Image 1 (cartoon, rainbow, N blue to C red):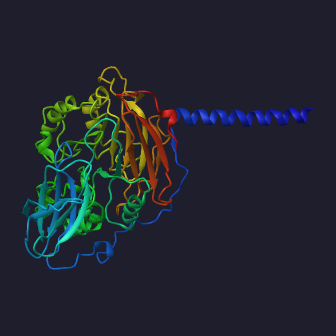
Image 2: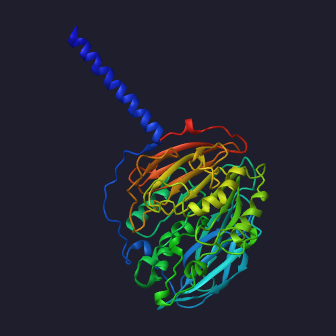
Image 3: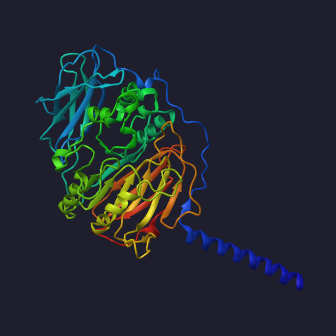
Length: 470
């Protein structure tokens, strides 16, 4: 009898211990993935890799990429580089099954950076495109011509399905190549990439070797030439190097990559907005001035009232430096911008914020931290159904490697985190629902490491945390 009681007491204590442990985990935060990626060096691919291959033919266009060219989605900016000579600025394009070929004329530019001189960088905007159509286009007209295609988005509207890919901090390592390959082979096909900053990592080479901007452009061309990549500026686009005489920030990025900033009333290419299908996308600049009275602050203050949730129900914000981050890396670097803008995000019911910078993955609960006013001492994030979910997706695979050190215990605002490389898909189904999935590079193309059904904050502002599935 005594032995049986002792056994029962032991079982009870074990059970009680498990319950208490689970309570502690719940109180501390969400889930830290048990998946452990084999730690190994992240190495850039050598310049003679096939993914960096220069296209054949005299003065053949290379580094071809497209992005949205206006607010509404009826224009596309086509960009490319020619090395031997300036060549033609013309883009020849036509709608599928049409015999009528049209021409658009662009401009070209060059730049110098330390001891590097760029090729001829061409930008040409194609306008007045029809929605939901396939177009072919040709660059290199009159010399070595190269042909590509793209799909225009559906007409802006609340119940139009549309799927975005999410990639950040990509670089050009072997892991970067795996990330891009996984995105390309994902059975849920992204139609546009929302890129959250840090492109080539050329600044990690001696004298910011701009040849690595060229190799990166050739590497990603297999995707960027066929679907728009929406660009966010990261810290590795600064290229501020006064020791070698380079004192103009963002020089390579501004020459190579265009955004439709003027269409949305912005004064700089680093912050702007677009509509695409059912989504209103606001791109912010973590490394441009954002305090009160600055151009970015003034623009954003005037931008939110333009959002019509009956037309574009999904409000998405892109930035580089995350506001809610439980890794030791870049911890609280986004705090000053958060203090400035978070009340606007809550007031306007932003659905989701995507950021990069931290080379790992994390998804937050819907939280806000807007009660603090210096004297009241209220400075802890709280659950807030009017707040966005914050997702850090800076796990593209660049040569700086993974961020593996996390703050412990996991904070309450953190729903899921994992130190792995990967990409994500955000698939909007209608005005009320969107399906989100994060994919780690080590899994099969269809395998999801973290998933969540999003409920739109305007049309269905209910708590979806119970529907998250990690």
